[in-house]
Amino acid sequence: INGYEEERREGEGIQRFDRRPGDVIAINAETFHRVELPRGDAWTLFFTGRFVNTWYFWNRTTGKKEQWENFLRARGRRA
Image 1: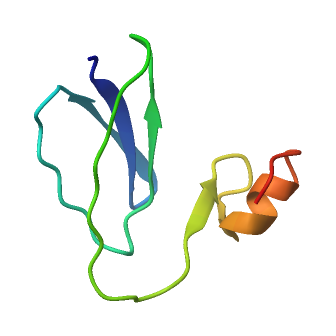
Image 2: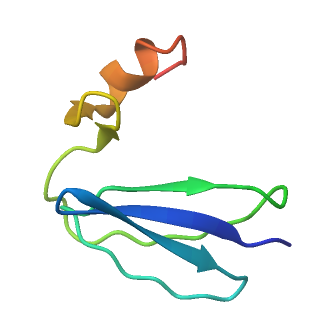
């Protein structure tokens, strides 16, 4: 099992992390992040708290957040 690389939006910048198998990470509902799988497949397990808001993607090109279903549909993916 491989790790992954994570990017988080921090203000106007991007912070990068190398995540290894066994890492425990906590983020809140307002944190935009993305993952890259440069070393092949990775498994993740996540737990959610109470419902706060729907999911969004942060569009790095426009700098705006997009509701997850619209983001996927615009890219030909099933929502």
